[in-house]
Image (tube, rainbow, N blue to C red; front, side, top):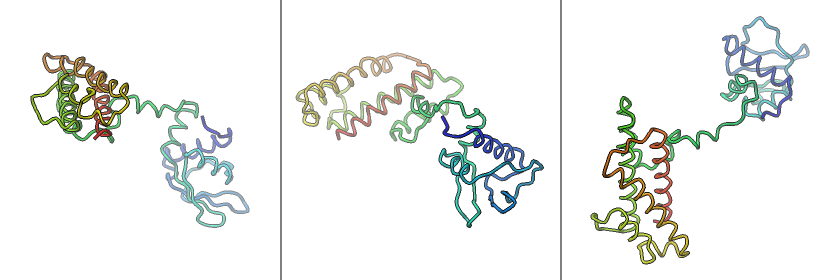
Length: 234
């Protein structure tokens, strides 16, 4: 995972160990003299390991520390969060950063604003009964999607709902048909949104579904994608 030699890994382990023991600040200065390296502010008793500028550059290239020249033979270095993770996992853990993108609602930064307003407060306020709160959140997500379909599709009739609304927007004579000139693609949109109405919106509107947090989170994230696709057609 890391393009480092064993000695470079040992050097980072030493840095992290000294910071954890409060004998070195996360930000420190390294200088090189004729007698060898020295670290400003180091208060530990262990002798300094061999520190070469090339090793510092290797750690920097892997995102394990930041460094900048502050003189001919001096560097200011700062350990990054990745450094502690690398040491704690013995440099062998696979890169699992992609999991964040596969975990529903792990990152709400790009979540649609209406979903944030209509769904998240419910989830945050009802942790004692999570299934019930997810049922309400899913129901609200369906209504956000339906309102957005009506808005982007230019359907003024508020009584037009469900499958009729989808057909009025995505049929071959629908309000967004001109935005989807490839008929197979238009039909795909129609089937996709109709499926959501039939499989999720209708059950949630007429009875208690009580999805698990995993199911509810996945659905809200999927609705977020459908909202983005609608905005692309606006």
